[in-house]
Each structure stands twice: as structure tokens, then as C-alpha cells.
Length: 149
Image 1 (spheres, one colour):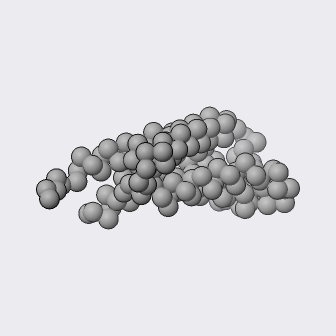
Image 2: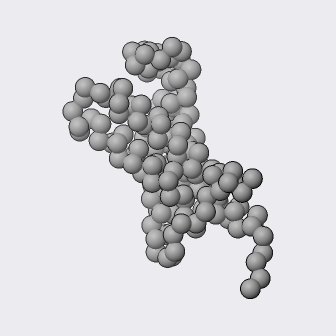
């Protein structure tokens, strides 16, 4: 159970208030920007977007179009508030890497750059957690036993 709790709510991996403040600001900006600029336009999926997902080879393009939009909107918002940060970052990272590898495979780097940058940020939160100033950290502290001495 402790490993599962650690996966969902993370362990604080930073040690300075400045670093935790930086992670908070990056989480807020990147999460909201991912949800607003990338995901919101995909919900509900348009016929064009569903067709694009189908061209990538997915067997149920409408289902996967919804999954991509929700991963970016819900995942971005959860990362922004620091709740279930690691699972949310994983879903967003997976969606973004699909865009990089499949959707933009033949495109110039400039076309892939934004998705790569967001994917790198999501990978940071997937591996490193949300930092001390997050709902995950607050939940984890409340559930941790009190240690004396």
C-alpha cells in the first residue's frame, strides 16, 4: 500500500522552497497551457481530428480521439493543481509522444517542438513528482504517521 500511495501522491523530492516554488509555477503554467491550448480544442473531437487519429492506425479512432483530448485537458488540469500528478503526467506524456511519433512523424522539428516540450515537462513530473506545494504532497503528509524523535 505505501508504494501505491507513493505512486499516486508522490514523495517530496525537492529540498528548497525556491525549487518547490519553481515546480509549482511550472506545474501551473504547463498544466493550464496543455489543457487550454492543446486539449480543449480536441473536445469534443471533430471529424477532422477523428480522421487524423484514424490515419495514425488506431482501430477505434473516435475513442482514441476522446482519450487524447481528455488526457490533455484532465491530465493538464490535474498536473496544474498537483493532484494525482504522476498518473496524470503519464497519460499526458503518452498522448503527447503519440503526437510526436505518429502525427508529426514527417514534420519539421518546429512542428513537433511544442509537443516535445510539453512531453518533457510531463516526464519531469512523472519521474520527479509535483513538489512540496501540491495537493499530492498535502494528502501524503496527512496520511503519513507522526514520527517522534
